[in-house]
Image (cartoon, rainbow, N blue to C red; front, side, top):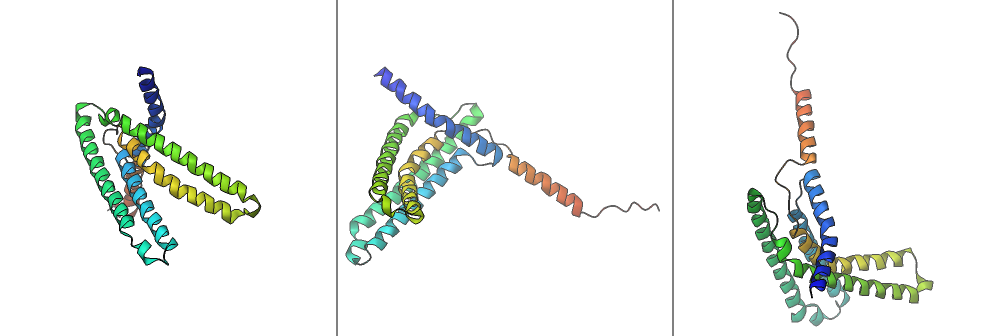
Length: 211
């Protein structure tokens, strides 16, 4: 059991470290924290849900009973409600991290969310692998009919469904990162420096003519 737990932590750290490094780089350079990226993943996930539902409605547009079936509407509403809950969770973790930064501690939810991260990670890898295998089999069976348009179509299908299955996992990894203390990003510093130079250039210069 201990070996399995150690293996799980090793796998989790293998994926968590790149998220942590990217979050620190983003905060230093762009001024965007890991929680900004977590919300971005959540918004993108909900946008994909809306897109998939739109594609579903378009596919069965000839049957109005299917388009507006109670089950499909209930599922979409539930997903958006879950999205709202995840948004609140992100806000709570961010507030907790802000308080911990003053105490010199990191994100306590890094350890609390370990089990959830591993579950979502396994589901994401397994689902993507199955979906990619299915697309490859379709491409092999229709090899003679493949063209650039078909390849781009298969890539778009993988991008939509792969993102749908991977974004919740990315959300959990981003909220598990520890943000840096508040500070001015490189872009903001450059923008401030440029603003000062432009202001100095446009401001009226004192008359150097002797009286």
